[in-house]
Length: 295
Ligand SMILES: [Zn+2]
Image 1 (cartoon, rainbow, N blue to C red):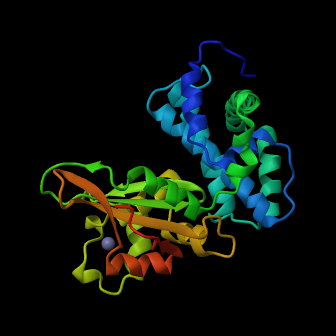
Image 2: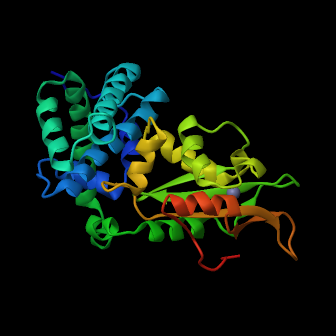
Protein backbone atom coordinates (compact mmCIF):
# COMPACT_ATOMS: atom_id res chain seq x y z
CA UNK A 1 0.00 0.00 0.00
CA UNK A 2 1.06 3.53 -0.59
CA UNK A 3 1.65 5.43 2.60
CA UNK A 4 1.61 9.05 3.64
CA UNK A 5 4.76 11.01 3.19
CA UNK A 6 5.29 14.52 4.43
CA UNK A 7 7.80 15.56 1.84
CA UNK A 8 5.36 16.46 -0.92
CA UNK A 9 5.42 20.20 -1.60
CA UNK A 10 1.77 21.30 -1.17
CA UNK A 11 2.33 23.86 -3.93
CA UNK A 12 2.54 21.04 -6.50
CA UNK A 13 -0.78 19.54 -5.44
CA UNK A 14 -2.22 23.00 -5.27
CA UNK A 15 -1.26 23.62 -8.91
CA UNK A 16 -3.06 20.45 -9.98
CA UNK A 17 -6.12 21.42 -7.96
CA UNK A 18 -6.26 24.92 -9.41
CA UNK A 19 -6.27 23.49 -12.94
CA UNK A 20 -9.29 21.26 -12.37
CA UNK A 21 -12.78 22.04 -13.66
CA UNK A 22 -15.71 22.34 -11.26
CA UNK A 23 -16.99 18.96 -12.43
CA UNK A 24 -13.64 17.37 -11.61
CA UNK A 25 -13.55 19.03 -8.21
CA UNK A 26 -17.09 17.82 -7.52
CA UNK A 27 -15.99 14.29 -8.35
CA UNK A 28 -13.14 14.60 -5.82
CA UNK A 29 -15.53 15.85 -3.17
CA UNK A 30 -18.03 13.04 -3.64
CA UNK A 31 -16.26 10.03 -5.12
CA UNK A 32 -18.72 7.46 -3.82
CA UNK A 33 -21.84 8.80 -5.52
CA UNK A 34 -23.33 6.30 -7.97
CA UNK A 35 -24.45 7.78 -11.30
CA UNK A 36 -28.17 7.77 -12.16
CA UNK A 37 -27.89 7.48 -15.93
CA UNK A 38 -25.45 6.97 -18.81
CA UNK A 39 -24.66 10.66 -19.11
CA UNK A 40 -23.77 10.98 -15.43
CA UNK A 41 -21.68 7.81 -15.60
CA UNK A 42 -19.68 9.12 -18.56
CA UNK A 43 -19.27 12.50 -16.89
CA UNK A 44 -17.80 10.75 -13.83
CA UNK A 45 -15.35 8.77 -15.96
CA UNK A 46 -14.42 11.92 -17.89
CA UNK A 47 -13.77 13.68 -14.57
CA UNK A 48 -11.41 10.91 -13.46
CA UNK A 49 -9.51 11.08 -16.74
CA UNK A 50 -9.37 14.87 -16.53
CA UNK A 51 -7.84 14.79 -13.05
CA UNK A 52 -5.29 12.21 -14.14
CA UNK A 53 -4.31 14.25 -17.21
CA UNK A 54 -3.95 17.42 -15.20
CA UNK A 55 -1.65 15.61 -12.76
CA UNK A 56 0.39 14.10 -15.62
CA UNK A 57 1.25 17.60 -16.85
CA UNK A 58 2.74 18.41 -13.45
CA UNK A 59 4.55 15.07 -13.22
CA UNK A 60 5.98 15.49 -16.71
CA UNK A 61 7.51 18.72 -15.42
CA UNK A 62 9.25 16.61 -12.80
CA UNK A 63 7.09 17.71 -9.88
CA UNK A 64 6.52 15.21 -7.07
CA UNK A 65 2.85 14.77 -6.20
CA UNK A 66 2.67 11.84 -3.81
CA UNK A 67 6.21 11.07 -2.74
CA UNK A 68 6.84 8.69 -5.65
CA UNK A 69 9.10 9.25 -8.63
CA UNK A 70 7.18 11.55 -11.01
CA UNK A 71 7.92 9.29 -14.00
CA UNK A 72 6.51 6.18 -12.29
CA UNK A 73 3.44 8.02 -11.10
CA UNK A 74 2.84 9.52 -14.57
CA UNK A 75 3.10 6.03 -16.10
CA UNK A 76 0.38 4.70 -13.79
CA UNK A 77 -1.88 7.66 -14.49
CA UNK A 78 -1.43 7.23 -18.23
CA UNK A 79 -2.54 3.60 -17.84
CA UNK A 80 -5.67 4.81 -16.06
CA UNK A 81 -6.36 7.29 -18.86
CA UNK A 82 -5.81 4.68 -21.53
CA UNK A 83 -8.17 2.25 -19.84
CA UNK A 84 -10.87 4.92 -19.49
CA UNK A 85 -10.41 5.93 -23.10
CA UNK A 86 -10.83 2.34 -24.31
CA UNK A 87 -13.93 2.05 -22.20
CA UNK A 88 -15.60 5.28 -23.32
CA UNK A 89 -14.46 6.08 -26.85
CA UNK A 90 -12.22 3.23 -27.98
CA UNK A 91 -12.88 -0.21 -29.41
CA UNK A 92 -14.27 -1.45 -26.11
CA UNK A 93 -16.72 1.44 -25.78
CA UNK A 94 -19.84 0.64 -23.78
CA UNK A 95 -22.93 2.59 -22.78
CA UNK A 96 -22.32 4.91 -19.82
CA UNK A 97 -23.56 2.80 -16.92
CA UNK A 98 -21.98 -0.37 -18.33
CA UNK A 99 -18.68 1.41 -18.75
CA UNK A 100 -18.98 2.69 -15.18
CA UNK A 101 -19.55 -0.83 -13.89
CA UNK A 102 -16.63 -2.23 -15.85
CA UNK A 103 -14.45 0.52 -14.41
CA UNK A 104 -15.71 -0.16 -10.87
CA UNK A 105 -14.71 -3.83 -11.22
CA UNK A 106 -11.36 -3.00 -12.82
CA UNK A 107 -10.27 -0.56 -10.15
CA UNK A 108 -10.62 -3.15 -7.39
CA UNK A 109 -7.60 -5.03 -8.70
CA UNK A 110 -5.61 -2.57 -10.82
CA UNK A 111 -2.37 -1.35 -9.23
CA UNK A 112 -2.46 1.75 -11.42
CA UNK A 113 -5.79 2.62 -9.88
CA UNK A 114 -4.34 2.40 -6.35
CA UNK A 115 -1.78 4.93 -7.51
CA UNK A 116 -4.48 7.26 -8.85
CA UNK A 117 -6.62 6.82 -5.73
CA UNK A 118 -3.76 7.83 -3.46
CA UNK A 119 -3.31 11.03 -5.42
CA UNK A 120 -7.07 11.68 -5.57
CA UNK A 121 -7.29 11.33 -1.78
CA UNK A 122 -4.53 13.86 -1.30
CA UNK A 123 -6.24 16.27 -3.67
CA UNK A 124 -9.55 15.71 -1.93
CA UNK A 125 -8.12 16.52 1.51
CA UNK A 126 -6.57 19.71 0.17
CA UNK A 127 -9.82 20.66 -1.59
CA UNK A 128 -11.97 20.10 1.51
CA UNK A 129 -9.56 22.20 3.56
CA UNK A 130 -9.92 24.97 1.03
CA UNK A 131 -13.72 24.58 0.92
CA UNK A 132 -13.85 24.95 4.70
CA UNK A 133 -11.92 28.20 4.65
CA UNK A 134 -13.44 29.66 1.46
CA UNK A 135 -15.80 32.63 1.79
CA UNK A 136 -19.48 31.61 1.65
CA UNK A 137 -20.08 33.74 -1.41
CA UNK A 138 -17.76 31.53 -3.45
CA UNK A 139 -19.78 28.36 -2.89
CA UNK A 140 -18.64 25.65 -5.33
CA UNK A 141 -22.22 24.88 -6.42
CA UNK A 142 -22.69 28.31 -7.95
CA UNK A 143 -19.36 28.09 -9.77
CA UNK A 144 -20.28 24.64 -11.09
CA UNK A 145 -23.15 26.13 -13.07
CA UNK A 146 -20.88 28.24 -15.23
CA UNK A 147 -21.55 27.63 -18.89
CA UNK A 148 -18.88 27.44 -21.58
CA UNK A 149 -20.13 30.84 -22.77
CA UNK A 150 -19.65 32.30 -19.26
CA UNK A 151 -16.13 30.93 -19.06
CA UNK A 152 -15.25 32.30 -22.49
CA UNK A 153 -16.60 35.73 -21.51
CA UNK A 154 -14.31 35.67 -18.44
CA UNK A 155 -11.32 34.66 -20.54
CA UNK A 156 -11.99 37.48 -23.01
CA UNK A 157 -12.37 40.04 -20.24
CA UNK A 158 -8.93 39.01 -18.98
CA UNK A 159 -7.28 39.31 -22.41
CA UNK A 160 -8.97 41.80 -24.73
CA UNK A 161 -7.62 45.33 -24.72
CA UNK A 162 -4.43 44.23 -22.95
CA UNK A 163 -0.99 44.96 -24.44
CA UNK A 164 0.06 42.53 -27.19
CA UNK A 165 3.60 41.75 -28.46
CA UNK A 166 5.22 44.65 -30.28
CA UNK A 167 6.33 44.61 -33.91
CA UNK A 168 4.69 43.96 -37.26
CA UNK A 169 4.49 40.19 -37.19
CA UNK A 170 0.88 38.94 -37.29
CA UNK A 171 -0.04 37.53 -33.89
CA UNK A 172 -3.32 35.72 -33.40
CA UNK A 173 -4.63 33.92 -30.36
CA UNK A 174 -7.74 31.81 -29.92
CA UNK A 175 -9.51 30.68 -26.77
CA UNK A 176 -11.64 27.55 -27.03
CA UNK A 177 -13.88 26.48 -24.15
CA UNK A 178 -14.99 22.85 -24.05
CA UNK A 179 -16.29 20.91 -21.09
CA UNK A 180 -15.84 23.88 -18.77
CA UNK A 181 -12.17 24.34 -19.55
CA UNK A 182 -10.34 26.90 -21.68
CA UNK A 183 -7.74 25.87 -24.28
CA UNK A 184 -5.61 28.46 -26.03
CA UNK A 185 -3.85 28.40 -29.38
CA UNK A 186 -1.66 30.80 -31.33
CA UNK A 187 -0.77 31.09 -35.03
CA UNK A 188 2.55 29.38 -34.37
CA UNK A 189 2.77 27.72 -37.79
CA UNK A 190 4.12 24.53 -36.23
CA UNK A 191 2.73 21.07 -36.83
CA UNK A 192 -0.72 20.02 -35.74
CA UNK A 193 -1.37 16.57 -34.30
CA UNK A 194 -2.55 14.10 -36.93
CA UNK A 195 -5.76 13.63 -34.97
CA UNK A 196 -6.48 17.36 -35.09
CA UNK A 197 -5.70 17.58 -38.78
CA UNK A 198 -7.92 14.57 -39.56
CA UNK A 199 -10.70 16.11 -37.51
CA UNK A 200 -10.57 19.40 -39.44
CA UNK A 201 -9.69 18.35 -42.98
CA UNK A 202 -12.90 16.58 -44.07
CA UNK A 203 -14.98 19.45 -42.73
CA UNK A 204 -13.47 22.20 -44.84
CA UNK A 205 -14.48 22.39 -48.52
CA UNK A 206 -11.63 24.61 -49.71
CA UNK A 207 -8.76 22.94 -47.96
CA UNK A 208 -6.42 23.51 -50.94
CA UNK A 209 -6.63 27.29 -50.53
CA UNK A 210 -5.95 27.20 -46.86
CA UNK A 211 -3.32 26.13 -44.41
CA UNK A 212 -4.76 25.08 -41.07
CA UNK A 213 -1.40 25.79 -39.45
CA UNK A 214 -1.91 29.54 -39.87
CA UNK A 215 -5.05 29.59 -37.75
CA UNK A 216 -4.94 29.97 -33.98
CA UNK A 217 -8.34 28.25 -33.78
CA UNK A 218 -6.80 25.03 -35.12
CA UNK A 219 -4.11 25.16 -32.41
CA UNK A 220 -6.69 25.71 -29.68
CA UNK A 221 -8.47 22.57 -30.92
CA UNK A 222 -5.08 20.84 -31.03
CA UNK A 223 -4.62 21.61 -27.32
CA UNK A 224 -8.00 20.12 -26.56
CA UNK A 225 -7.13 16.95 -28.53
CA UNK A 226 -3.74 16.72 -26.81
CA UNK A 227 -4.86 17.39 -23.26
CA UNK A 228 -7.74 14.94 -23.49
CA UNK A 229 -5.62 12.28 -25.16
CA UNK A 230 -7.84 11.49 -28.15
CA UNK A 231 -6.21 8.74 -30.20
CA UNK A 232 -8.32 9.16 -33.34
CA UNK A 233 -10.34 11.88 -35.08
CA UNK A 234 -13.41 9.64 -34.78
CA UNK A 235 -13.06 9.44 -31.00
CA UNK A 236 -12.64 13.22 -30.80
CA UNK A 237 -15.65 13.76 -33.07
CA UNK A 238 -17.72 11.38 -30.95
CA UNK A 239 -16.82 13.38 -27.83
CA UNK A 240 -17.96 16.60 -29.54
CA UNK A 241 -20.99 15.55 -31.55
CA UNK A 242 -21.78 11.91 -30.80
CA UNK A 243 -24.84 10.58 -29.03
CA UNK A 244 -22.74 10.23 -25.88
CA UNK A 245 -20.86 13.49 -26.36
CA UNK A 246 -19.17 14.85 -23.25
CA UNK A 247 -17.89 18.10 -24.85
CA UNK A 248 -21.02 19.67 -26.27
CA UNK A 249 -21.72 23.35 -26.90
CA UNK A 250 -18.14 24.52 -27.25
CA UNK A 251 -17.36 28.22 -27.62
CA UNK A 252 -14.46 29.93 -29.31
CA UNK A 253 -13.13 33.42 -29.89
CA UNK A 254 -10.02 34.72 -31.59
CA UNK A 255 -8.09 37.95 -31.19
CA UNK A 256 -5.19 39.58 -32.95
CA UNK A 257 -2.53 42.10 -32.07
CA UNK A 258 -3.49 45.45 -33.57
CA UNK A 259 -2.29 48.98 -33.36
CA UNK A 260 -5.11 50.94 -31.83
CA UNK A 261 -5.59 54.46 -33.14
CA UNK A 262 -4.25 57.11 -30.82
CA UNK A 263 -1.98 54.83 -28.83
CA UNK A 264 1.50 53.38 -29.11
CA UNK A 265 2.07 49.65 -29.24
CA UNK A 266 -0.36 46.86 -30.05
CA UNK A 267 -3.32 45.50 -28.16
CA UNK A 268 -5.43 42.35 -28.33
CA UNK A 269 -8.53 42.97 -30.41
CA UNK A 270 -11.25 40.42 -31.01
CA UNK A 271 -11.98 39.14 -34.50
CA UNK A 272 -14.18 36.48 -36.11
CA UNK A 273 -12.63 33.19 -37.25
CA UNK A 274 -11.77 33.00 -40.97
CA UNK A 275 -14.25 31.39 -43.42
CA UNK A 276 -12.46 28.06 -43.38
CA UNK A 277 -12.40 27.89 -39.61
CA UNK A 278 -16.06 28.83 -39.51
CA UNK A 279 -16.78 25.72 -41.60
CA UNK A 280 -15.09 23.20 -39.35
CA UNK A 281 -16.16 24.93 -36.16
CA UNK A 282 -19.79 24.73 -37.25
CA UNK A 283 -19.41 21.07 -38.26
CA UNK A 284 -17.98 20.26 -34.82
CA UNK A 285 -20.74 22.10 -32.95
CA UNK A 286 -18.44 24.85 -31.70
CA UNK A 287 -19.95 28.34 -31.67
CA UNK A 288 -17.87 31.38 -32.55
CA UNK A 289 -18.49 34.11 -29.99
CA UNK A 290 -20.37 37.06 -31.48
CA UNK A 291 -20.53 39.35 -28.50
CA UNK A 292 -19.28 42.90 -28.92
CA UNK A 293 -15.63 43.65 -29.08
CA UNK A 294 -14.34 44.92 -25.76
CA UNK A 295 -11.69 47.20 -27.27
ZN1 LIG B 1 -8.95 30.30 -39.60
